[in-house]
Image (tube, rainbow, N blue to C red; front, side, top):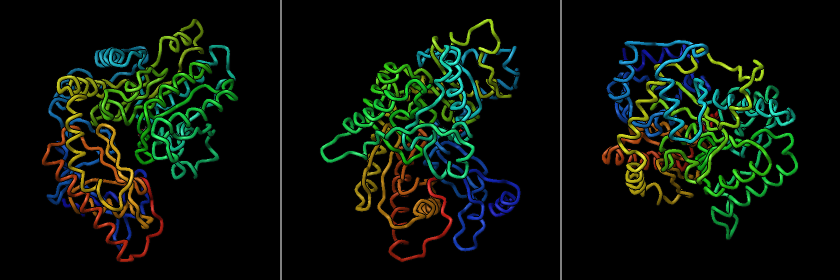
Length: 456
Ligand SMILES: *Cc1c(COP(=O)(O)O)cnc(C)c1O
């Protein structure tokens, strides 16, 4: 079977996510669909013998490279004894061990499991509102998100996801939360630094909470980097202010570390750089090293205690069929072992600095502004008149043997942690070549294409 065989069958049978399917069917410059036969380390291999460096860790899930032998071995071992059992009325070693380990790492416990990031958001929001109901304050049931925030795309999660493209069509279904100004450091006014932007954003939220705290259950935020809106980065003082405000107004702080957890931002968890603890912590994506779907919500003893009661209905009666799946938990345990045995948080300091130096050509490009890095997340804003810059760039990147998919006009890289120096050079050189090739189309005056899906 060749790439083309699989492409044809896939387009007939599969409805691909976050995709206008017709873009794949155009006869002029179709958006290429890449059938992947196997993956190893940072590389994806197609059916025609080509390989692509996975510069975005397959939507930010992969930490230690594809097909890691330690995770594979852990899964093979687990399959010998227990594939799956429901977690209501039953328990098993992988879920117990994982919950203990996550609690020791975060200082939060009572791990509740889902299967993906959006379900973690749903669980945290439901738990927060239900907590206030159990506490005799049922009026506290509204949520505040941050401008540009992304917490998943189920109907509940869309209430706090501030990305119009994902939300517009479903607006009538969504009970929209309030949106606080973003602490994005790029929003600095003349004379302001990143910390000043953060203080200004926090002051606006403070004003809002002063008026609305009685109806507000929780503030939800992505600490340090809002990834999906285009790698918007902010100063950690914002998180300290969030913690103070939530304490002052008796509102929960939900931190969504689905994308930024597990060493991505330079610490094991992003919020640790601010020296604070949230009331709820949402984890997914890198949790299993990018092998199996799993999410977890961790919370405080105080929240847990509000549900612990003789009355059944005061319990958290939420579930997913595969909650706490043993294979996924075993993959997560193997991932935590790798985090410890490779001392990855420290190792990433070196890898991140090395890659940032390798990206110098992109950073210095005359069309690039706001070059920024947080740990192993690298981003640049590109000035281009191409409305479909993102899609054109992704196509040129593939031609360079690279998976890079800009979000709007923000080019970013978020590679697996195991990327070597040579692979880093491949990534950085290809990223620059793809940038020049994309901008050359602009000067060639090619017509803009209609129906662009920006931001995927
Ligand atoms: C990806 C992501 C989600 C949603 O996770 P899914 O597994 O795609 O549902 C939520 N929050 C953040 C910050 C994310 O990056």
